[in-house]
Length: 279
Image (cartoon, rainbow, N blue to C red; front, side, top):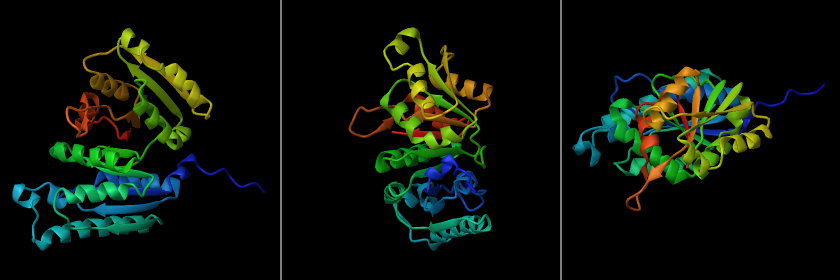
């Protein structure tokens, strides 16, 4: 008797969830529910790291604090999340390190190196913190990051939108997300820009052939820019009811420090769906 083929999602064997907690009255992190449902679909191991409480307080807290309440809040969130994984029959590791800023961000990035995928919250009330945490995980780990807005507490991946600009970051993102693309019902590669821009990059149709050879159900669209590129992608994601957007993290850098470029920064601030980012 032949065994059923494993899900393509099984390629994600080890997933990290980083929790950002603004205060103890916050609802459970959306990244928790989102990644638990993905972890269940992939039959993966999940590590939950709740260590961000001290990052979103005033400057006095940023310098570090001896208040034991910080560690208690972190520990409670991690324990609650671990309990949820146990109820779902999943294998979970959790930790709640107490570290001053910015060491806690570096710790999370270092932990991300040890996992196939890292999920982080996108919080519109802590936009700078969210962007910094995502940035550190991308740059510090070399692995992809799922940035999860609060409007998406559960994983869905039937319809995936791939933002394509012909860059190496976009190609890396699409290849990193291959397990999700293979499991999706429909994948649309979207290029936004004028004709001159599209002529100087690798056409989306050529990259679509690469995906099709991996048995991805893919279509290609070239969209006229309506407002900003981010606005065009945001609008199209709503129009096609996308579950997930895949994109390379665009950037600009006036110094040696990595800084997100305009498209990535805009989408992180107002994400219509979870963002799968690679660098």
